[in-house]
Amino acid sequence: GGAAPPGVGRTLSRRAVPHRFRASLVGIGQSGMPRARSHYEVLGVSPDAPSDEVRRAYRRLALVLHPDKRAVGVSEDEAKERFQRLVEAFKVVGDETGRREYDESHASEIFAAEATAPAGGGVHDRDSWNDVIAKLNAQKAKRTKTADKERGKKAASSGTPDAAEVGAKLPFPAAPRPLGCLPEEIVLEVFGCAGVSRLVEVEARPRKTAAKAGSITIPAGDWRRVLRMTLKETEISRLCVAKGLEPSTCYTFRTRAGVKTEDLGEEWRGEASRLVPEIFGPWSDESAMAKTAALSEKEAIRRMRAEKRDEARAMAKKSKKSKSKKEKKKKSRKETRKSRKRKRSSSDSDSGDSSDSS
Image 1 (cartoon, helix red, strand yellow):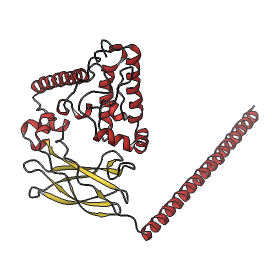
Image 2: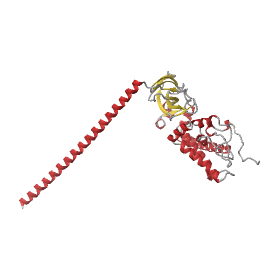
Image 3: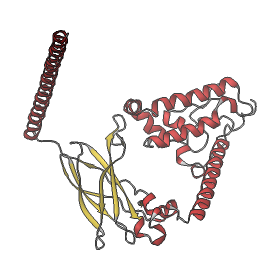
Image 4: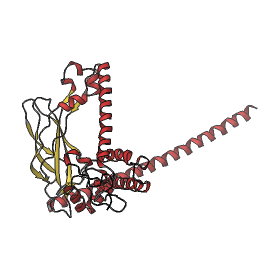
């Protein structure tokens, strides 16, 4: 039949679309609405995207896809339906608990959508996904340009150098190398960056194997700092131990290098150093995955006994504190009664003295 709606059948190379906004055109129904295979595809983010990136993607898409700003040729019902899908996706992926449950129950769909997303099309705008991307990129470029201009004016007026510029110039450190594993510890070789002061931070996050996707692993938690150190001038790398991990759990690590601003020269001393004491560069890639060892039966029994002992001590301490509180309250009431009795006896003696004198 007739001509295809604007935007339908158009192709778009993967290079032309940033990964966080790439989506698949799975199929179009009678209304012309593309069907996304996962909430991540609706939001245009990868399944391992951090929470702040998910929120940013939702806010930016909500501004473009709101029914009040629908494109020419898109009906009001279709715009509302499209926007509702975006809201529903964010309700699930934007909530930590809901996202964890969704990842566990839709692992195969998420993997399939991420691994086989074809170039071109989009899940949001029937008319032109290119237009959505262009608009979002233009908004981001405008905000970045404005922020850079304001930052430059502020730095010029105050004489303070730009921390963001210094951080951007710091080199990428190599990803930590896992070497050995204990029940709650993983030995790492952490590499520094030659030519910068030796501040180094390492973060870890657990990963788990997707139930329906074979050996594919997905993040099972947020990044958290496990190491922070200062390398000596003669060091390039150091063996470290990441502690406080969970037994029998897979982890990956990333690291970044930083500088103390007091080491950057006179322009960073004084007030500037107090306001910005440290500056860190970009994060490295994720390390190879390492798994902590399982607890031995003997160690598990010891820990269970220790937990029971600590619980008994806590209960005894609470009981002792409650008993002490009751005793103090009882003593306070007793002293109050004595005080009232003394006041009454004193007032009786005063009235007796006045009658004798009369």
